[in-house]
Length: 118
Image (cartoon, rainbow, N blue to C red):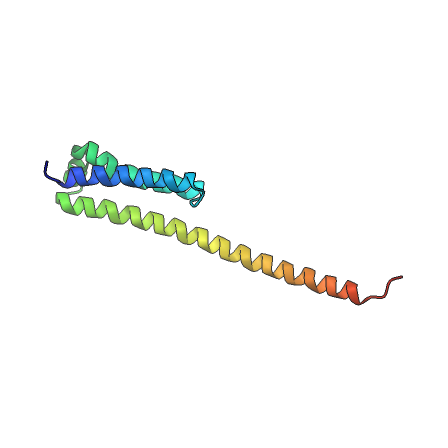
């Protein structure tokens, strides 16, 4: 058996899917990211199972077959990277807010410790 593009996409999709399940089960990957990764793994999996889908997409967009595969791959990578950037930004802002709240609480505790008991 020789490894052509369809077989490679099929193997890659199955591998990505199984790795995602493994990392979720080991609690090293959050479920919200797992959903994205499963969607990412479905693209090459579906292209491997139904290679005509990619060929029809290539024909509809007037792209060559390799160009269509590259376009879809880059689009998926862009969407995933963008969603990770949004998530990291939200966590960064939440960490800043929590750090500020902690500093305010520590200042209040120090102030209460300095006051003599009534």
